[in-house]
Length: 186
Image 1: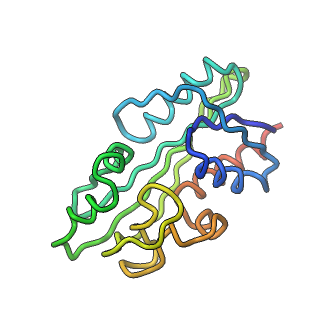
Image 2: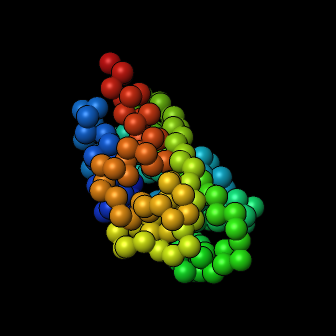
Image 3: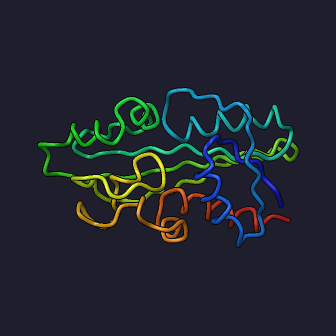
C-alpha cells in the first residue's frame, strides 16, 4: 500500500518511511499545500489531511507535533513550529534558564484520510522527557537537540540514529499505530 505524506521536511519523511516499511506501507513525500490553522494538534493534522486529500484524491497522511514544556504551562505546545522558527532552541532554553523543572512531553497527531473509501482517522503518540540545559550535537530537526527522553543531561533525540529515535519517539509511536491499522485493512 502507498500513502502520500504531506510534508516539506525530508528528515521527517525519512523517519516515517523507516517506521512504516515493516507494515508494507510505502511513503511518498507529497509537496501538497498543508493548511496550517491554529488549534490543538489533532485538529490541525485532521484539517490539513482533509484539505490535502481533496487535492490529491488519494490517501494522505499529515502529522502535527508539539513540545509541551511543564514549567511553561505547556508552551509552545501546538505553536511549536512557530516558536522554533522565531526563537529556536536557544530562545526556549533562555525561557527555562531559571527553571529547575525541565519536564516536557512531545506529542504527535497523525491523521489519515482516504477520500476513496471515506476513512478519516487520527493516531496519537507521545514521549515524556526533559529539556536539556545545553543543546546536544546537531542532528534531527526542530527541538531534537534540546529534548532528551532520558533526563535533563541524557542523550537528546539529535544524537540518536533514526532507528533509535523512532523506537521511542512520539512520531514513531503514532505512525506505528497507523501502520498497524493499515496492515490490518483488506
